[in-house]
Length: 417
Image 1: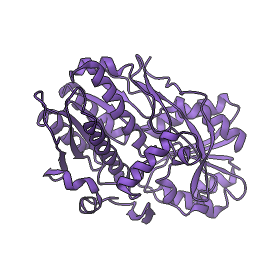
Image 2: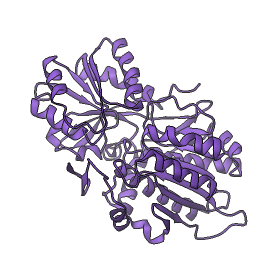
Image 3: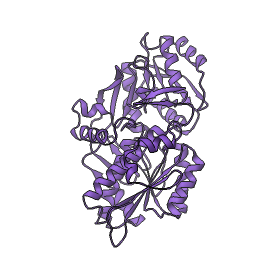
Image 4: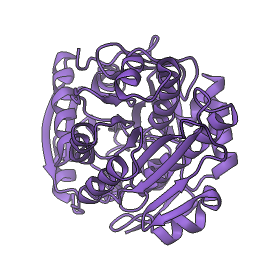
């Protein structure tokens, strides 16, 4: 199945970004040193007696999630360049080590082992799917004795020393989102879901909030990640007069599911689509009319800058697109905002620690904060290893998002305390 994503055609049933195409379309590759298949180094342009600070990026440059991983690499190299231009961290430059995890957990394990044991990086940021995080976290933390930052929207519960999370969790997304959906959609929910940990745990949390808010989950079903036929599910949604379809499916099956609902007349009869990771990348997978009215709740949308909610968000978006164009969009669902936060919070923590010693940096990262970032300021909540941030509810209109609501201050993650 080929769909248009950004300015490129994407095969959602196979590898979404080939290595060859990545090499052809990535501006920073001119300054990169290829270390082998799927491995690159962006060396520091100046030296320090203590050597560079080694930043390891392990992400899905190729594979099903390549549209997200490519934006991760763009953000990491952009911020490393900016930090180095400002004198580095405590006088030491950043050196970026990039590994392609290829949307494959076994590959991810192998490359983070390389980053920790061969390259001796000081910190690793990456992993996209929850299964990848779970596969690599002990390899990084326990065996590699290295700090690990996970930048994605995820289901919560990653409570382990030396593992820090800079994307939103269910309490930040779902607590405000479900009451809004009931008010702006209705009380009868369907939960069609992919069969892995993120949808399972997210839906468990969401069901409780639906019921506490006076709604009802009429049905909850789980499907293989590569399922393409959802005719029976769509028939049930229409027959049961579902008000809100709360989607935790992922590509490759997601585009066909949305098309099927549209053709069945779900939104035409007043139904509401909802998905907590739907962002600017995803709005380009289906024609605009098929996801019109899709509601989402995330920490960043480009509309935050365009509609005047936050000036720094506009600057970040404009600078990113000036550098990298729109092939791989800066978006929250893809984890770009979490990657940005991760690097800036690490800069603050390493500056305070005065070293890259894991314990020293972890102690400083526990309370690190930034005044500006995508979506606004952010801060780590002490004792939780998770990040407080602004949250926004947005609705798709004519193929893009408009902000409908904003959290009252930074939304605090209820995790790990």
